[in-house]
Length: 86
Image 1 (cartoon, rainbow, N blue to C red):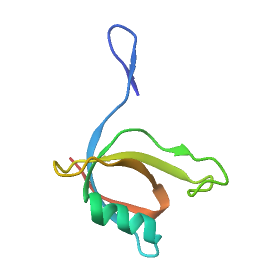
Image 2 (image 1 turned 30 degrees about the vertical axis):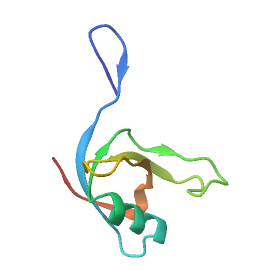
Image 3 (image 1 turned 45 degrees about the horizontal axis):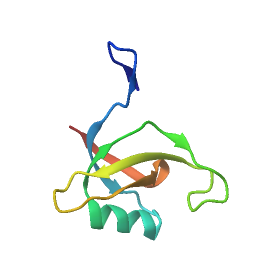
């Protein structure tokens, strides 16, 4: 996150291309296949809550860069490979 001149905190947004790592869950594979491979990375890594579908793992918040999709969600960092940051 960065601070703008009026001291508001604004998220750093990057355009990234992702692919699932070998052994990634079906959930991660489906999200990337259906909504990607280009995404806007909306937030830095965070730890998710235990007991959730992501069970305390480091995740990133992404939004589909596709004009035909409007999907935003969390992907586990250990299940994705960053092909490129644009």
